[in-house]
Amino acid sequence: MGRGKIAIRRIEDSTSRQVTFSKRRKGLMKKAKELAILCDAEVGLVVFSSTAKLYDFASTSLKSVIERYNKAKEEQQQVSNLTSEVQFWQKEVAILRQKLHTLQETHRQLMGEQLSGLGIKDLQSLENQLENSLRGIRIKKEQVLTGEIDELRRKGTLMHEDNVELYKKVDLMGQENLELYEQAYGRRERDHGAETTPSSSTLFSLTMGENSHNPTSLQLSQPDQHFYYKATTHNTST
Image (cartoon, rainbow, N blue to C red; front, side):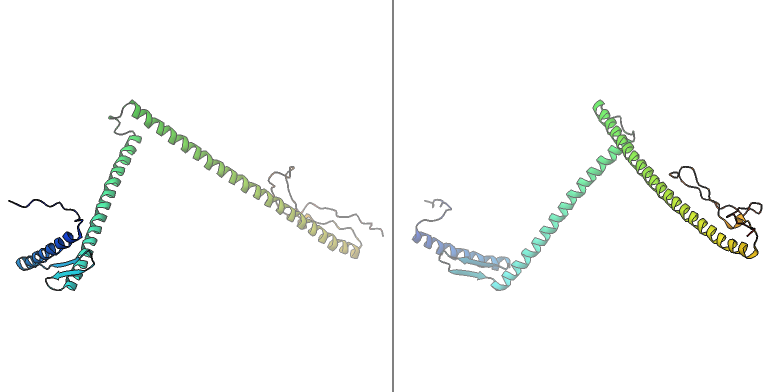
């Protein structure tokens, strides 16, 4: 009569549990030793009982077995990580290739190519995309042109202000020149006792538009030998 199968579960009776542990531990140690001898394998076995008692077996040295185990696990982990990373990037490459293919196909359709396989809805959607794109381009173009016009207006205003300022400076120089002329020729008239008319070659002639708000044109006239200006009226009889 054969033995019945034992259910693989925790043995509730402590005595039976301890007996079973002792028998199976010895059998496990024996199998480990046989495996090391028969197969020339490096075997290490560590067992802790329920009472925290240690039982171990090693075909060579338990320390060397543990070191070899840790090294092997580290190498396996690195290989696993490398494999996972390679698989990740392979998936990323496949996704990017699919996106590139889709973009290229869309670009060709926007250029009016390869439209034979599109239905009415697809063509209508493509037409709407083109219209929206053109609308956006026109809006952007108007914004750029408006910005350039505003910049030109600003520069024109600055040039006008500079022109007015230059006019004021030239006018001031003309007044100073006139005062110097009157001082010089007035003294000569007093010395010679005769009326002398100044030459316009020593004066500035300034031309300005009627509207001071418009851009001003500044010119310096050439000396005129036939034009004379009387600065002041003197009494020659005294």
